[in-house]
Image (tube, rainbow, N blue to C red; front, top):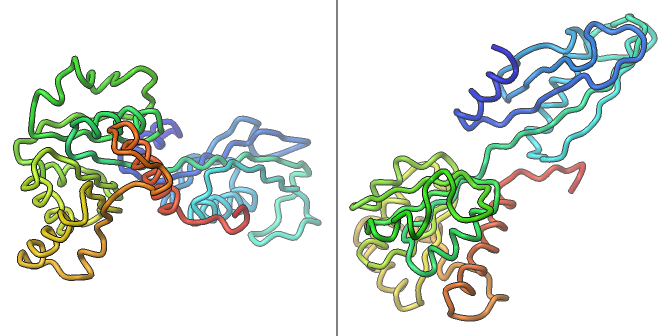
Length: 277
């Protein structure tokens, strides 16, 4: 499998990876400039020359993956019998510089309910690199003249958008990728409750946010406990959603507040690179 096919395969499996590229060769080296290798947490595809230089690059790539860093970096190694290495001696006599470029798994956000707030929120989030799932039980809320189609939702969209009309919205949870963030804002409190309940029973959900008032959540808490949820389960639900620094009850203002908090959650979900803060 070449490196391009490897990346496509890893992306389809939502597996992060680091692309290692031999960008500069001085003197003699096992491979010429431009050689590439793809490193995932458990697999390696391609080669940049074997031996110490490759083993060192693989180790550093996996450190980057474990740290969750998104920043590329350069790694320079001297291929000399005088160089102290962990994986043996390579005495080609040259020096190589490799670029290690991490490719994270795209975050996934699912908006249940594409009413006034949901639509404004989708417009904002569609301008970010993520998988955006728009789910509603009402077909008219997802009509092309309202949200566009999955290949070109909204002007300037960079997200990969998935549009799902689900008469039973909670059923769409099984189609979400692992690590998805769920935002619940349907037109119907019965639907909201069902999506929250099923989200708490679905493995791999990163966060659950519910739009609504304190009195709404009080009623939901009682009902969810009756349905068998525990206090620790309910602690996973954030309501109201958004950040308090953005006031206002207009749909666009609420959407800005929720989007800001969602971007914070996405950033917090990534491991911290201790070398870069």
